[in-house]
Image (cartoon, rainbow, N blue to C red; front, side, top):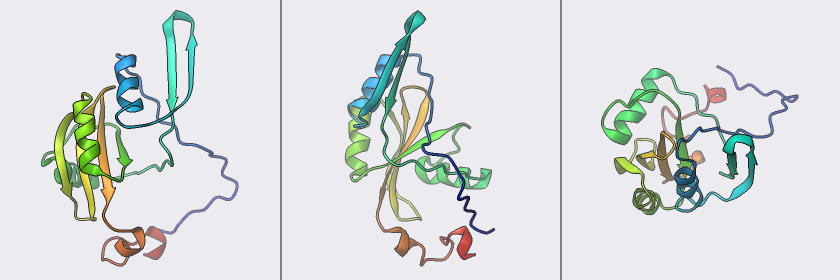
Length: 155
């Protein structure tokens, strides 16, 4: 597989859109304990509400079923349901996990060091989402030196 670059790509932002039955609880969870600043908020007819929270840089991680199962096993010890999981890189994985649990998330997997040298935890959060909180324990350049961690263009 080779790296693909598209100089004419027009994507400026990745936005994950979540429908939350308890809008206020979801906003309170992501705004305060996780610290995502509100970028914009809008209201419309019929009590329609949306809040756009700034989550910093976005990436799209695409995993095959074997990789998803492996990550589920590493983070929780068991296979988890299908769907989208949000992953937030933080500087204090243990502290953020504790803060999010106190704010209403259920810890599915306590912080643990992964084979790819990050500290990961898994939480069930408001809005029906599973979250991974991860703290990198080594840089990408260090990780790329180990077998199995090269990028597609290096293969």
